[in-house]
Length: 119
Image 1 (cartoon, rainbow, N blue to C red):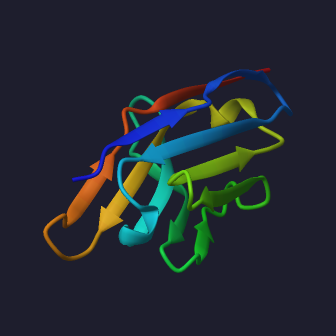
Image 2 (cartoon, one colour; image 1 turned 180 degrees about the horizontal axis):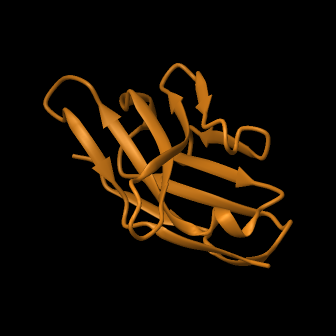
């Protein structure tokens, strides 16, 4: 199994920046894909950015010019740097780990961290 713990959310003004971090309980190289998703009440959870174990990244069109996903292999963390934040970015941000085979196959989620962007 994989436990994920997010940190770094909070309140920021329009145009500000935040850096989210997700700590995994196992080597992130053993995880096929890690990523960040977000959800607002009444809407489906949506992808923000993902990174494969090989280092390939993918970004949602709505945020690709404003976010960067990165990782620290020593700390087993995946980070999301968010810049030029807008009020519509307000959401709960979740870390995800997807393992596509083996005994730990499955999708794992963190508890979420609230990001609030004030206008």
